[in-house]
Amino acid sequence: MPAANLVKKKVLVMGAGVGGCAAALKLAEAGYEVILLERNKKVLAATSNATPCRLGLGFHYMDLETALKYLEATIDFVVAHPGYRVGEDLPDEHPLRHVRYFITKDSQFPPEMIMQGYEQLKQAYAKIVEQAPHKQVFGPPENFFRILDRTEYEHQANSDKIAIGIETQEHLLNWPSYQNHLIEQLYAHPHIKIYTEQEVTDINYADEKLGYEITAKTSLNQFSTYSSDLLVNATWENIEYLNSKLNFPMTKDARTIRLKVMIEVELPEDLENVHHMFFCFGPHCSLSNLGKRRGFLTYEPVTNIGQTTALKVPAEFEKFTSGQATEIEKQEYATKILAGACTYIAGLAQAKYKDIRFGYVITSGTNININSADSNIHARRESGVEKPAVNLINNGSRKLLYMDKNAQEVLEAVNEQVQALELLNAFLGDYTRSDLKKFAQHQFFSADITDENAFEVIKKTVGNKVQLNAYLLKFFSKQATKLTKDTKSESYQKDADNPPQALPQTMCY
Image (tube, rainbow, N blue to C red; front, side):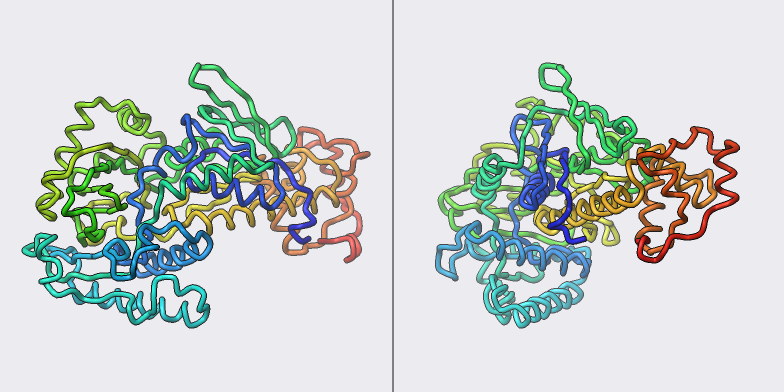
């Protein structure tokens, strides 16, 4: 059944970060009615707003699979959203059109290994451009990166720390401009309704039907209830916690949440047009220059505030991300980050602290030691799109620039769920959640099938075009007598022991 022919249903998206916003737009453009809930006063205001703005081409990941995925995602993003690169109206040689990577002398990986990875990225970019010339958005492949002479950077960066300097064709994302564009699109779309200051506190299955009821608390401690056919959980650090409301346990040590901090500074005049800089690999520093003397700074030994593997983020973390950090705490982090960054870029001693942003980074597993070469922080392979239950889709976009690909995955998952439901509804008649469980238990003679997993079992059967016995029509047609709650009843067992002949092939899916 083509997606265009599907009966469009209502989809509720929890979380209005980049993942939730991109998914909401994609679903609305496909014809779904979308409700978008956000716990903050504004959309795109939490972790998504704590981005260093890199349009990364893979240079800061040593995991090749991650680096290649990031390269492709960035190229596709720039093609789909032209006009949002810092300095793209400037001459090609201008510093704001290039990111410099400095491989430090104490890098966690040997320079030879790093350069080999960079060559593989260059070859991958060349292949992409060869197959799709319109994707040559970062210059010709032969200029993908170049090795710098020491004299080209020693006046800007501490050359005593640097083994190799690389200049790349990377740009920065003009995040404030793109953020405003995305917000305008959301509020202008007729199929999207946005409700802010709505913190989801509970999720329940709707009575009988395969849908959900969501309870949200407002800033005034009032409660609202929303219902939806399908649910997209894009609440980032709270995905697993909210899924647990539906009795889906989080796998032990499946992920680690890191609380990080970044500061905004006013750059001194002599750094107004300085290159963007990233010192790697290890706990070093980075400078994102957005132009007009506006810069974002990180210094990893301070930037990484804390970590947790708990189901729910602790209150001491939420204090920072909810805007409740004290001015003394903010100033303390800013002072330490500036002091650390000055050991890499001496000119930052004259920079002025302007603002601070807190956010979360999620990494698979628990090995997230920033001082270790085998740490999981060096990889970000997962898209974050998962389908844990009937009509429930997780969208934890692991990188900001994964947002478009994730949105497409979410749309495909929603279409798949709707299509399967329409097939079952057309074949089986009007069904309820408990009916589906009894059907699956009856068909597969298993008591292990629950309300939550029954639909997946059924969908697999339908998808594999297994012939369904005629007694299923009796049990699931609108005129049929509903199955007794006791699956071991005499009438139920009688039908199971004496099923009619199988349906004709033309009636099977």
